[in-house]
Amino acid sequence: MANEKCKHELCVCAAQADSEYCSDHCKDAVDQDMTEIKCDCGHPHCGA
Ligand SMILES: [Zn+2]
Ligand SMILES: [Zn+2]
Image (cartoon, rainbow, N blue to C red):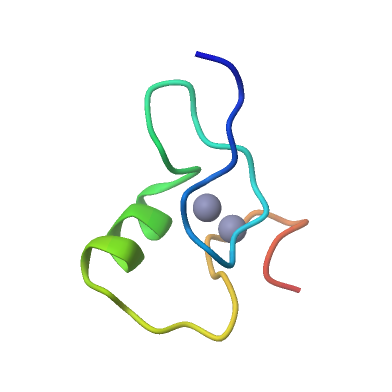
């Protein structure tokens, strides 16, 4: 699979090769329908 964008709407990271998300944070946020005003995945170029 090529590098796809993380499925978290607010996230700008590329998804991991084995996941639709860049991180467990994004997966959990979407699974739990959490409303975030910014992505909080912790990647330095994201959520600023
Ligand atoms: Zn992110
Ligand atoms: Zn993400």
